[in-house]
Length: 220
Image (cartoon, rainbow, N blue to C red; front, side, top):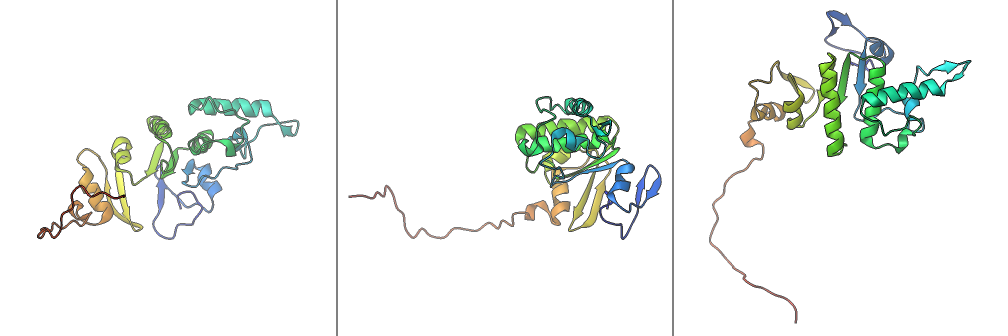
């Protein structure tokens, strides 16, 4: 609904004090809303540069201007710390983490002011996760709104300024500050029961020993 892919059936979307109703994804993009989906939306057979500037490819005399295309792509790749990626590389040849950076680069090119991430680290390596976190922190420092969907507690407490808990599609609670929020409280709100009941452990007393085996060996 935020991206305009699905129509709002209840409630309202407010952005900078104005109510918005998006009929399609193009309208949401025009208002500066970008979504980095868990299932990436890149075109694998196009180049990095073509994916970055898809929909706004530079032209010269009616033809694709590859010089300007690659120059602009290099600028964005440098911003993302992906200087080792050549703009002409096919997206299918990139790692999942690199492909995700291309998605973020598209959002930056469109000057998105709201960027939503859906479970972004689920398929990333440790190094790629660190790089993503640096990018997210930078986006926040630039004054952009970052919506970060995750179930990983360490990411919540490391990166978030506020937390909203949803369970089974329903809003449970919003914490406007992380200052007094603790791990157990958040987990309890997520699973719907006290943290002590998460594993359902019940202590049991052991009975009498019926058999003991010591130094048992096989073979001839």
